[in-house]
Length: 397
Image 1 (spheres, rainbow, N blue to C red):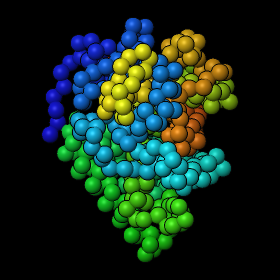
Image 2: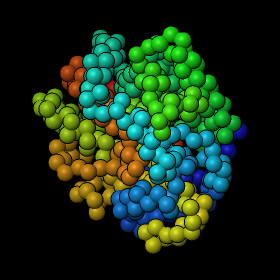
Image 3: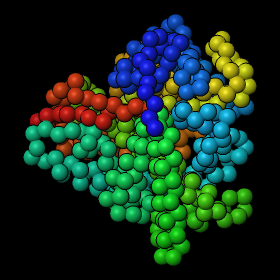
Image 4: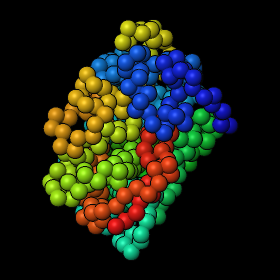
């Protein structure tokens, strides 16, 4: 049952990342908090602290003894409950290392590059469908499809199943945090789906991410089906909404900044540098930790059992870490952003996400070098631990 949320009165003492004002535009809120109260607090969700500075976020991300990863999505379930474990993201050192080592080779730079042509084919498919149209929605018609469709290919299932993937992601990340029944139902369905894929590959074989995982060992033993299903669950959940948001934010920026769009059309070799800046300026992910004892961060008290939210989008807009942090500089040279996280749980799929964004931007600009936003008021964003544009109405010129 969904819980009604009261509007926020003071972001420093009553923070809520589901508040419509925050979802619509968090950046002025970050700037205000960084100036007067860099560790925002809230009694919501059983007690939550939201970190906004690069240094505080880096400290919490690297201190796995004080701040545990056993729960990473803020929700209404009390933090003393362990919850389901999806290796390696919910495991603290040293237990996270084994599952992470299993997954890393599949996403290393060399293996990632073998997906480039598939990504190009998927982008071309969506762009072909827009030819001849005067208007479109770059979120719904383009950005949302690429990571979901690629995930279907990687999992060895029909591309049409990506619609179900996106629905599960929506239920788990946007609806589930304030509706535990929905979260449990979606999780159960996803785990059953993964087990079904494992059963099918045992019988019929294949050449995909599932069969790759089946061939791996953990601590010298084959991975148990229940653990493998959870690891596949995590890979699906982590790879869709985040990259969809990254591509969408890039599209929205290019639709509203014609000087940047035209420069990238003229200098496509600059796209990888621009992608890094889009990742910095429009980082989508807020990841939680649980305080394991009474402690402090940034000079502020944090109670045992409190949620501690690593506001990576805020860290990447911190003026002590980045000059002119609110300016999007597509040729920014020094850009050690935290869009993929910090510490032991830094995103292991970052190579693939970058490749998807680079190709998606390149092919969009090659096919449609001129486009513009038609209605700024129609733009909407997802809420929860991943924020990205979900409606981007543009005119294709």
